[in-house]
Length: 179
Image 1 (cartoon, rainbow, N blue to C red):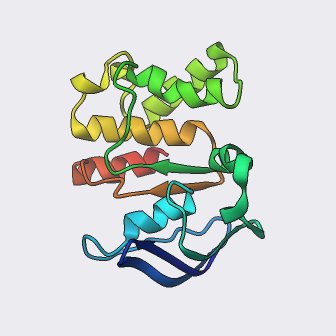
Image 2 (cartoon, rainbow, N blue to C red):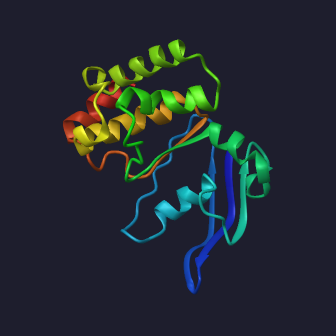
């Protein structure tokens, strides 16, 4: 489903990624572990085309996605991402954050998107906080909203950049069992 070949990424003179190779099959879960500053986030940002690789290829279903041009939005509908810093819309409540992309990008009717968003918020244990704004949520709650938001697009691939860093260990296991 996803293949990375000889991927490199440099920021001026700093080589962050050098000849990274990775294959991920459908249904497979891959975890990348390494010290802070080792390029894990940069790798994920390259896979989601938030960073442009310096070299190499990223193949999604056999197509090199580094040359998509205007089709990037269509690709990102299939490859979701949960960011380290959550990136929730501060002027939208939790429910609106989860509904936004399905309504805007996938043209799902608002009523249907609202039902799906409430179901996802329930799965991450936040149905009672649906109308709370990010500033009124704890870090762990914001992170769970971000996870629900990514799942709302029903992506084929979901990238997590430290998805449980703000969650209590008990919450992590309970949440994964519900999903």
